[in-house]
Amino acid sequence: MRGSDLMDPHGPAHLPRRRVLRATAAAAGSLPLVSALTSCLNLGVEGSPHGPLDVLYLGDATQQQSFNQLFDAFREAHPDIELEARGIAAPNWGTFANTVATQIAGGKVPDVVQVATEGQRLFASKGLMEPLDDYIANDRALVDAYFADVDPRLRDWTETYSSTDGRTYYIPGGYNTAVLYCNTEVFEAAGVDLPAREWTWEEFRRAGVLIKERTGAFLIPLGFGFPFIDIMPWLLTNGASTLNSTWDEGTFDSEGAVEAAAFVKGLIDDGLSPRPGGTFDAVGQLRNNALATLGGGRWPTLDVRRLDMLDRVRIVSWPVNAGHGSPVGWDGWPILKASQKKEKAWTFLTWLMSEEASVFYARNGGSTVPARNSVATGAPFLDQAPPGTEALPEAITYGTPIPSPERGSEVQDAINQGWQAAITGTKPVREALESANERLGGLL
Image (tube, rainbow, N blue to C red; front, top):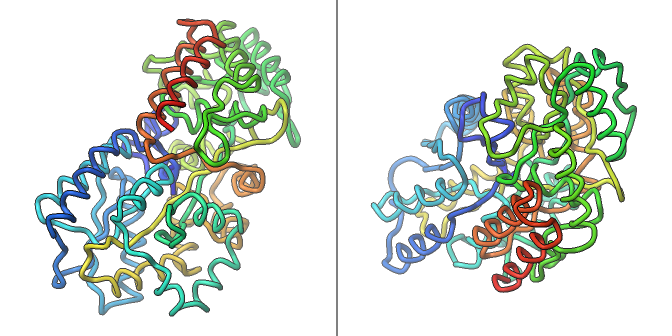
């Protein structure tokens, strides 16, 4: 909705470092899901035509509270449709997917399931979802009005990357891009100005050196387990990526990727980041002025609100080397082919496309950027958010979908392990990325 994310399965205290993007977070471990779901469908497991409309989504207790408010608004708008919305507080999208598969295997078939970017092509390729083309044709005016208010890239990406046969399986929902949340008190204490518009990698590094010398605070927490924030922004701001634009060839060993990994390794070697792989509490350290910046999408705003830090945080775009870049991940809302309540499910999807739903979610703790531009650039989204929040919807204009091929879990493992070896010094940077890229070639 990815973040891919994207809902966070951990509590708010874990949002920045252990985030699994709601729209765009990793779908690691999703292969068992596909096997289980396909088996269930082949066995003729179907949902019941009776009872409430069953909607599954990924979310912890905090996000479930926000979603429950959204679903209550749907029930008020459609009192004739009984809705059962179930949030699964899984640690990642793969676990969420396997939980869904287990429930289906036990005979409880949902009607609608939230799917992050990373799982959309995989699920569609296995025949798990109902094609939505006829529904869209029957409600053309409503759907066209929705997409008229959505960045055209989001529609194009959904058509290009979320289907393998040209049919439509998902209605795209909220999305996430990558920005930096900056503690203004730390920058002020170090006598370092935040950029008015953009800054370069080198300017970012120099700021970190001064901050470390003058305040002792870290510049940024760097890692290797969450590509949406740990890897992709550095690659994309240097004209590189993990895969090519059609997701069928690895590009993880390009000169731009090697340069990006070497730069990140240098930040770690210079002590401007805590050593990756530990239990660094990024939110707590940001609050305690021991951390200057934190990478994220919309979701850290929830912590900033919770900790009453709106007057201490400013959002800026990611520092650049070759040029602006950001990963993009979004929610996809499909109807399961096995659903026996497809018309009610479509009514639910059309309501999610409404301005009412978008405004409601933006105002009530949503952790993604609303797909509707009018909402993403308006008060419902920008109020009660850090200054600079407009950088989130702006980033989709130069963003790139996070690569999500069908064998996504194995691809992500290769990418994570290669980046880990590169930035921690287990292998020389170029060797680490070349080795990872060779693995990618065998998977694609």
